[in-house]
Length: 268
Image (cartoon, rainbow, N blue to C red; front, side):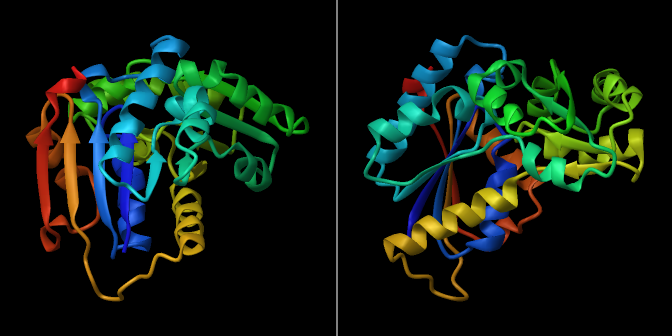
């Protein structure tokens, strides 16, 4: 059994934690949300890199056997530095699923909804350069993360803003949409309401957790079939609210697990 740290700027990484609980339910988890500073996508590259390193070092000090950087923006800006500094444990990042999107698109037109920081990052540009035969319609989802953080993923204000962001992608004729922020899988219902079932939605949570599983197996971490590991929810802003939103947003039945929440004010 392993202790796995999951870090995000807020509640978006709960989509990754949800998939981890599905594939790897036996492990223990610490979910760390830096909600007091969400969203990261509008902050400077230097700030994101420094803050991401600080929080991952905290998780490593708590004894985590692996850390998932469940934030596209933090991965784009900081993953290489984090892996270099914490080289003794696996560090798994997330990135927009543009490769599977390009493979699955029938007409070669793919929309990418992500944060401004992710779309402008060198890492994302390098990914795009590997797929010259596909047209990518890039759209920053400004304002969506704060609404999701406020529990308004399916609210009218979110629907109106989302419609504005999706319009250029729809006008370009995209048949595939990459959800390039871990918050955005929680907008699936709203996206379907606006676009119907005609567009293929891509997120990479399954692939991210499969990579974690491979890393843990390489470490020789044994699983005990049937066991349910514990989850600790830690927030830099409101731990009880984070715990509540986990119950609301995640499909996993958290009532079957040992869960607790903690406010870490030292990160303010």
